[in-house]
Amino acid sequence: QVHFTESGGGSVQAGGSLTLSCAAPEYVVRSRCMGWFRQALGKEREAVASIDNSGTIAYADAVKGRFSISKDTAKKTLYLQMTSLKPEDSAMFYCAAADDRVYCRHPQSYDFGRWGQGTQVTVSS
Image (cartoon, one colour):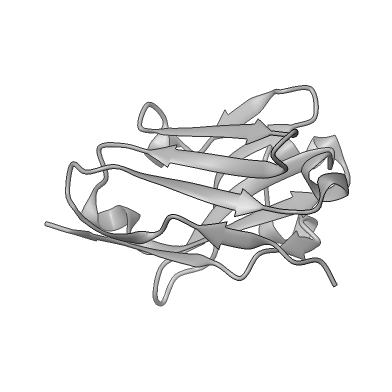
């Protein structure tokens, strides 16, 4: 069983910022694809951002220009910097890893086999 330790969630006002962190075993951080997903109450889990092992990054249209994904292999940590947060960003955020880099192009939750426990982000207006 893989254990991811996610942190950094919390409650902020609209326009605020948060940085999420996901600590994982080294072999997971070196996975061909890692990503952040989110799931709001009553909605399906959706991809937010992904990064493959060549450094290629993709973002969902809803977060482009506001969120930034990065990975520090030495610290075995995946990050998601979130700025200009909106109430509609409120959700449980999960980090995940996939074995094939191709899954980073159009991330779908069913292609990711390793998941964290999630961290809650709540944005108030």
